Image (cartoon, rainbow, N blue to C red; front, top):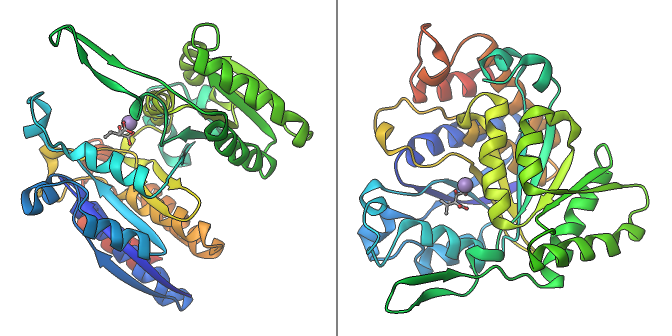
Length: 351
Ligand code: IPM
Ligand code: MN
């Protein structure tokens, strides 16, 4: 197969972790006879510095034309402490999600056999965890009406959802559940929010179309608690944008490290793959960041093009590196800490 992949390295550790994912993907391509053309494009603070905005039109054209996008991270500390900054790197990410129509964010949570004891949670609670949080990504409070009134002394952000937006996300959730253990949990705050009541009503109405799927409805506050208490109670979770943002960071604790969890964002046409961690500016340029979440995001990419053996090969070599202690400092625990690039080299040559 021939794939055109837009490469958006972004800020902070983005370029370093992306480079490892490229190395590993190239090794996969060589082994399985594929050809990948990488098309680099600017995003984030790097794009603001170069052209004054975080998701330039030119980058959008590259992404639209590509078969998929591999994305590193965006965010820079010089914007975080400046609430008055007019252009922010994160706006690039949101604009990209919206313009590419990436309405479904797939964030799996699983454990690695050799890392189970690195999780702050007890082994017997997390062993066998294999869940997916399907987060709505182009609606809700992230994209609602917002502003100030009362001379700037009152601020508002509005959470709005249409039935159609909920249906297209929920449909993906039902389909995903069908291919797994057939359990779907709709997470909302329907005891308080009107938009959540529309979520619940919409998903309930879809149940008859998927009779094999067992659907449950839970409030987000209760799920925040139960997710770390009994993660194996969950299979596929569907939820709105902000709840999903919060729950997916929480869920990453189960695996033991944020540096490990991959994600995919998909829409009608485009597909984007990125680690769930941020730009980790303190580590930028030091060759110490953990590249595995980005490498595993590349595995999700292969999987979505129906290249299952290729995806499996990546997952296997990642597991082998963990089992043999070929790990970056976040996982080294007093043992040898390998550089980001050394982990990437090891993965590529042991694939
Ligand atoms: C994420 C991030 C983003 C979000 C930020 C950087 C805008 O936290 O991808 O989860 O809130 O969606
Ligand atoms: Mn987040």
